[in-house]
Image (cartoon, rainbow, N blue to C red):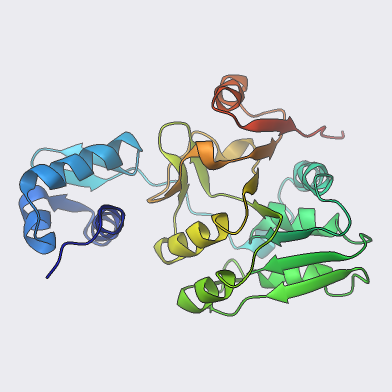
Length: 260
């Protein structure tokens, strides 16, 4: 059997570690039909991103980020912060634009601030986002199909990805489970990773909305490097050094004014 491409192989390595919590170089070498040297290189690259931790003869699962409560519960957590981030991100969307809005609680606040816009097209894979905009007169809502992830009310998987490949938008607005300067953007739900990657490719402009709790965290599945972010909208509690580094690599940083 032909060896998977590097990216596929590394994703499969992460899935294996997530299932068994540890792997050895020899086991992975036999599984993927590649040399020990290739596997060690993969593990070294994944460790550099913070996606796993190297161990003698193999690797172990990186310390996971704490589990998040369902999106419905998160909607009422830090409401003021999310509302301000949502308003700042919505200000980047003009009437007549087409935009993808991803799942999450902060993105739901972006959607709320788009009500009243004119001739706006919103594509989403999130049922809560579609609901927020369902009655908006000037907004056309397009919802993908897919397998529903109940806790997030999001649609993921092959059907969602096929739908997303048929659409192009001006901007993508999405949240992210964890953001690390070294490890990049990561997610803690492996079946959603390929959907996230497909979403990112829908438009040249990627707007990430994330409060300060998302930074310095690493989840189990790598999505993309931080350099892929066009605009980051966050709050004033995010570490200034982190924001300075992001600006150095070309990310436009917007710090939302949090109202007391």
